[in-house]
Image 1 (tube, one colour):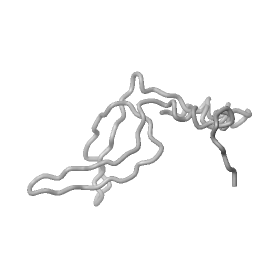
Image 2: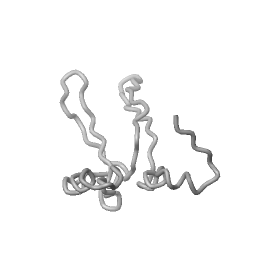
Image 3: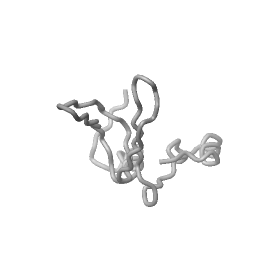
Image 4: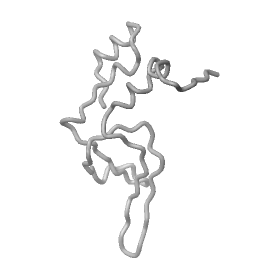
Length: 102
């Protein structure tokens, strides 16, 4: 997902949804995981992965075993941006779900 400046300005000046400023590039761009040294802040690796969309990284930690260290990333990811469109209120209005706004 990328935010384009023109799309952001158009979204802010119109009545469209804020999610309209995002553009899905998963068809031609991988997801890049950046590994940062927590002591120095230096980037020590870039690891490409399959294109995905995520809203929230759940947990990331180091798993040290003997002479190796593994980085474990627990992430709720989707293989496309379809989730954003499915969360529009109009989609809930046309289903049998009961939406409670508090």
